[in-house]
Image: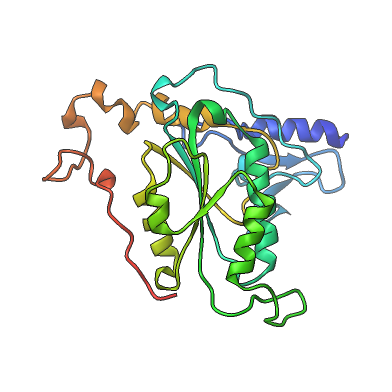
Length: 271
């Protein structure tokens, strides 16, 4: 394909990045170069990049998107999942000892509020947990002269005025209709494992979408598309009411549910 726009269309059509499949080989292709002096060479994965090779190997196209190619827009699922309405919690962990991460967080969370679609239908609430750090933050000039944890938290609330800041204990008493909460951890609660355990304790929904503070949505993403595998995949745990329990595989002896669903807590570790 000579024209880059046609090449992008070909690439994105092959990737089918916005669809899921039970076929593990779906989306795997061998790309061969033709019509040039380097004909009969093949595109192949080499570490963290793609390169041309004499060996023909397949790779999962959806994992690689050329920088010039815009992503093909995601569309709403044709199905509405009534069982999931108001049953999705969106969470994010944040840590601003490096001050630049607070700016990354603003971009990340703004992209969620802008591009995550069907929020009113499926999202119950947004929970953003912020880790404690001592002293000043590391600024762009490489010195620890930036805002302290109290200042960066005030900046969070100023940038997103619709969200409420609260301690972990106060967050447990939040109103049922509160849409966005920033949970401000204490020094005793430092660490990623503790952050995730606090989020697990606060969530009351069936589904969980988690972001880090450097993840970004670059285009519209529909919650119904993210839910689709949970309800439509033939092996989904949400369809087990339709199946013989003998077909579930390993189950825990004390609860009658798969061991992966028993809600084990994460072990704390020193950060």
